[in-house]
Length: 74
Image (cartoon, rainbow, N blue to C red):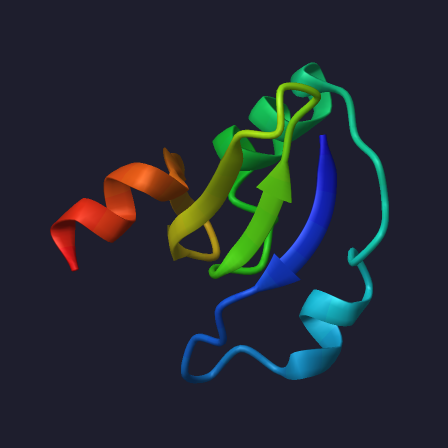
């Protein structure tokens, strides 16, 4: 998966997102990061199947949601 963009979240410095943009991670690394809560909330990943995923929550307490699901809720 590649960090492709971000949806800014209040109180998350823009530098936190920029540290990851363009970087590739294995699915194992992504899920380990979610479990540890290390990804900047609002970070957007794209997988090999072109599915887009959004990091939801806060540092320390997060989950990964499919972008299409987020769009349906909005």
